[in-house]
Length: 164
Image (cartoon, rainbow, N blue to C red):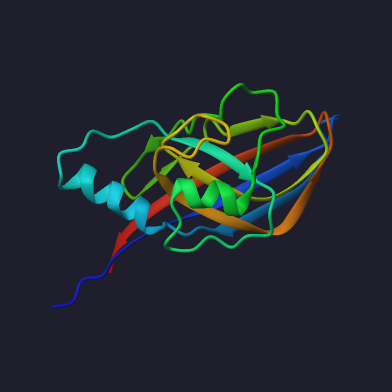
């Protein structure tokens, strides 16, 4: 008897200009790095309490890898911090039978500078450019988002588990 447990997710990114007009919508698959897998295992089997989660953006053309940690990732990916929110936006999840998502309360970034967003990530730390905590998920966008002051970027993260 074979049973394959699979976990993964997608990021859905909506970029709007200062008038609220949609510039682009992008949907990309994520990677759950080893640090994220270890976090899940510790919560599920190790008695660790769960955590709050936060979404961040990054600027470099960097493809996340399994060995990434928050410390290595922030350096390699170059987190974008030019938005009005004081911390990384909270990932406010709703859990149903097979997935978890923040679709009802998307992470919103109110941009206050010119930057190019190339990816997003999910962390247990709210601190902008912080290297503590666990890197739970990350993804390189399929196309860069050229941001200017006044733009908004909303990020949905839908995480799914399946047993096949």
